[in-house]
Length: 85
Image (cartoon, rainbow, N blue to C red; front, top):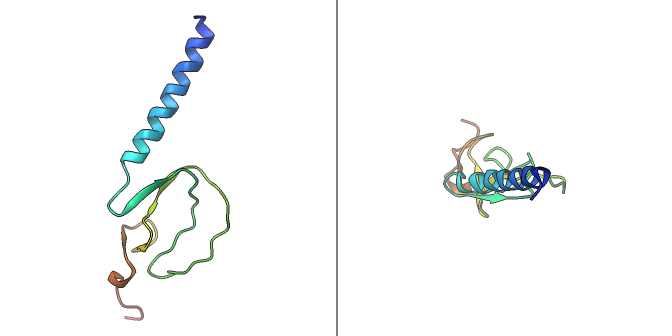
């Protein structure tokens, strides 16, 4: 094997390990989405209209869950704090 082939294979392996690590580090009630974007539902905006774009992979809330706040944990919508208080 030539050194350039070894470098390419090493880079591919490193990328695969990084993706696998990200998938395993999602929080409670989250799943890894290889086509996530930075638009997500929160308690304040539970039905947010998000553009259909594919961003880099990231953790997102499972179906039926919303972010408690931007960057917060994923909770069921009925667990959101009451609004207007």
